[in-house]
Amino acid sequence: MIHDIVYTRTMIRRPDRLPCAAGMAVLCLVGGPPPARAQVLDLPPRPAEAPGGAAIARDIRLLEFDAREERVYTEFAGGNIPSWLRILERVEMTRQSGGREYRVTFWVTPDYVAVGSDTDYFLVPLSPQTAQRIADRVGASLPTAAMVDAIWVAARVRLDPAPIPPSPEMTTVQAFEDHDRLVRAQRIRGSAPPGALVAGHKKDVVITAQLDSFPGKVAIYGWHRPDGEPIQPLYAGHTDRWVDYSHGIRLVSRVIRIDGNRRDMLDVLRDTALAGLLSDDGVMVRARYSLPGGDRPVASIRRGRGSGGWPCRAS
Image (cartoon, rainbow, N blue to C red; front, top):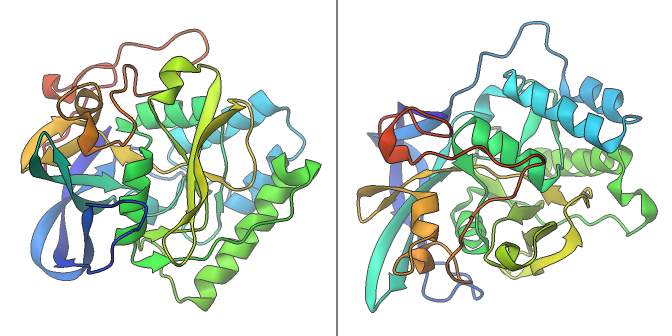
């Protein structure tokens, strides 16, 4: 679940546009008045005795896949995440559907899912199932490829992709840690403060209409170069148990705005007239990854509290 807080931001229009996202203009956010609302992840406070990211990484190095994923989920659900990851950043884009233009506003975590403290944190790649569980825990979704493009354009900090040469080790926690250190060094060189909207350093695990036809797969997209072209086109060929160092989990609030009107992101993606505002590959019947043992019902945000519902006030 995600709550609203009063958070000071102002909007400026960026002139740059992505060549891979024609027709989309994006507004980015910088500090300053007037006050606006921002959304916040509804999680417990971080426990005083909670381990840092480096300790968690060490703990999960030798765990089997499922145990490793469960440990990370437990840390996240228990509130062991950086405080700056809890405050979502606002992104706006204009998109066309049915011959008219709409303004779409959505809120995202400023970085990919991390566990640990404000300074000792670990950007941890995860399976789409665990990513979906985490999103469900806070009333969020994973992004579409079109939303990933918009996030990159709006990002206050854009990091260059830093690939590690392919090898059998790329799916190991050691590789996750190695890449985490590379990204941390990039942030230091670029004077990227924690909590700034940052993009370019990971491929996103995304949702796509392709998943309705090819269950059991993971869809990935992004890792934008400085010119705005993604290294990774939308791809859903890997099994959903493929997790490598380059994958990142970005959470998107299900509460979005279309021309100022509050909507549920999942309802929009299932709407034949509006799905194109959020995605370039058609209506999504499910708009989520299936969980082992079956999914719990996901309530609409318009119903307020409930399983998968939304207790927050719309911003």
